[in-house]
Image 1 (cartoon, rainbow, N blue to C red):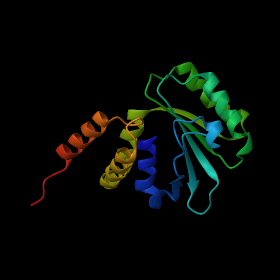
Image 2 (image 1 turned 60 degrees about the horizontal axis):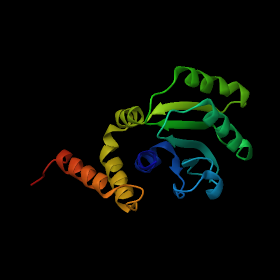
Image 3 (image 1 turned 45 degrees about the vertical axis):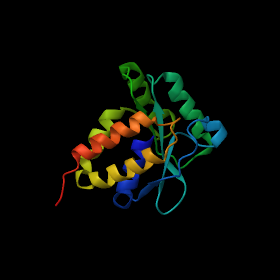
Image 4 (image 1 turned 90 degrees about the vertical axis):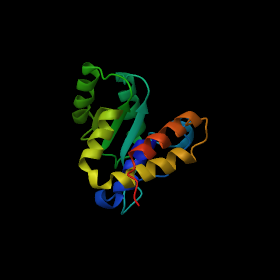
Length: 167
């Protein structure tokens, strides 16, 4: 969630889109009223246009169908994107592609987390420092229950090692 939010924060002015304020990710979407983990709006309005759903497990056909159900009250959504840290089943990927016709033009996609970051950094390589700054701020502001202290330390160590020393 933090990676996607940081990516949109860093490229918001270029994309003409922004991430809505993150809801509690320890609560179900039904409790927060969110359609997914990260909701993206155009800068000109607050209608949700893209929804990101993060999974630390394989995405299933049930997950896709649940996403379709969530969108019944959000007519402006154009994209529902799952980002997973697990393997992507080709049959589920194919099912997601087929949903476009059934939903009247809502694109469903499944991406792997590292692939998303790699693609983002390729497209917006000139803005990688803004991305890292935004991600760092989000990571450090999270309570230890969401992002462990050890992970925060590891990120900062990597960040320090990757940042050139200027004199």
